[in-house]
Image (cartoon, helix red, strand yellow):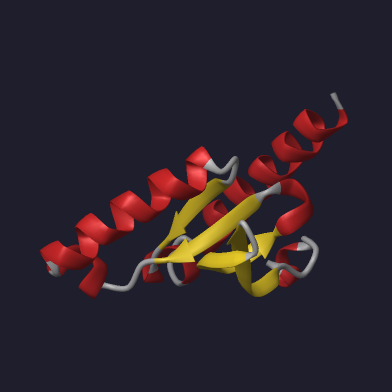
Length: 99
């Protein structure tokens, strides 16, 4: 993301509810409540992991987070479009925050 001119996100950001950690977001812009979760191939081939990911994403959304799912392809062959999506999401979050 930094290579795309975006600010450095926080790594493994802890999400707290009543002072208890309920999730660690892979990469996050906490002030914007924007997070990025990397989904390796096992996230799609393991039914239990996939179901857990869906519940986790819903919980984070309910807590006010906007989560982008990221795959190996996003970081490899689709890097340019991925950075454009991130930039758009960051700008949207900044706009919503300033309203």
